[in-house]
Length: 162
Image (cartoon, rainbow, N blue to C red; front, side, top):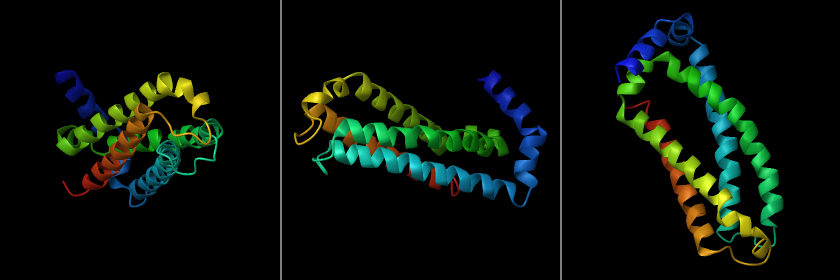
């Protein structure tokens, strides 16, 4: 971990990090962009997951997925750079914070769950696209996805208080 700590210490000394800490407006604006992007990302994911769980069964899963996936991917253009900027404001403190570490682990788990879903059970979506219930594994992964994203949001909010 000395390499990570060294990189974090270097990042904390950069003008960007200093600007994020010292500017009256920069951190709140970046945080707002991060939250707005997360609202779009989690909103799109939640709507898709709710459909897989059985809500609005007349909506074709594939069509809804194609539509919502665009929004989720586009939101990453806001969330990732803004999150990196927020991290840059206090990298040493974030790396020492167990809630931040938990948030990163939950994000990774949510990503792995999504990859497993799209690489696995979603390949049979034609059989349950509209009007039919999704297979139990798909419903389990959708429920897990919702729980993971709620946990990620919770950790993000807790960072301000821990």
